[in-house]
Structures are given as structure tokens and as C-alpha cells.
Image 1 (cartoon, rainbow, N blue to C red):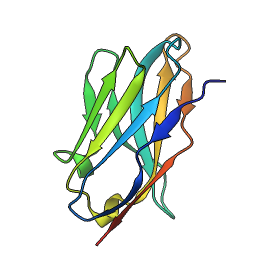
Image 2 (image 1 turned 45 degrees about the vertical axis):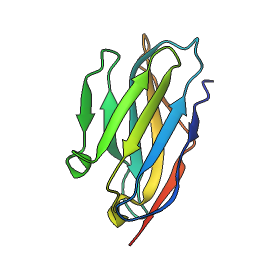
Image 3 (image 1 turned 180 degrees about the horizontal axis):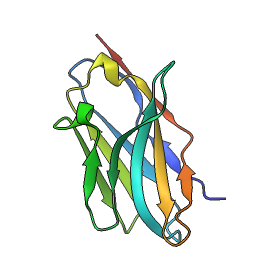
Image 4 (image 1 turned 180 degrees about the vertical axis):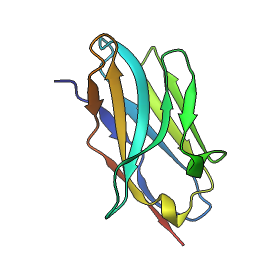
Length: 116
């Protein structure tokens, strides 16, 4: 079982910023890493993803405001969230895809709440 350690969620006012981080065990071989979110009553959706080569993909709703990055030496992925909006309120989940099996692992989730 691979345990992902998430941190960085919290309560922030609209227009503010937060940074999420997610660390996987350093011996774990990883392909893509990403962040998903799930708001109450809604389906989980992709927020941003980054491949092992550094290519990124963002949901239209966060383009220009969020930036995903990764530190391959630390097996850690970050989500820098700027100009936060109340509609960004959700539980954010880290996702890591194993290199050879392509199996997806999930973090425990971290709450992000943006007040208006």
C-alpha cells in the first residue's frame, strides 16, 4: 500500500492563495501526478495534472490561476492556487499513477474553503 501525504489546505478569503503538497514514498516509481477536487453534491473532477516529463494539463476553470509542479527527487507534487474563488471550495485529492502498472493511488484529501 502506497501512502500519500497531503498538506496545505485550509480557509482563505476570496482572492487569496494556498499551496497544496503531496508526497509519495521516494522509492516509488511514478508516472503522472495530479490533483482532483470534489465539492459537495458534485462529482470528483480533474484540476491539474503533470507528467513525468513536465507536461501539464489544467481544467478550464483554473487556467491562469493554478499552477501544478513536481519535484521528482522528492516524489512530491504541488498545486499553487492563486486568486481563489468561492467556487474553488472542495476537498482536494492528490493522485499518483504508478510507472509500470499505471495503477492510481489517492491521497486522503484536504479541505479547501474559500469565503466570499
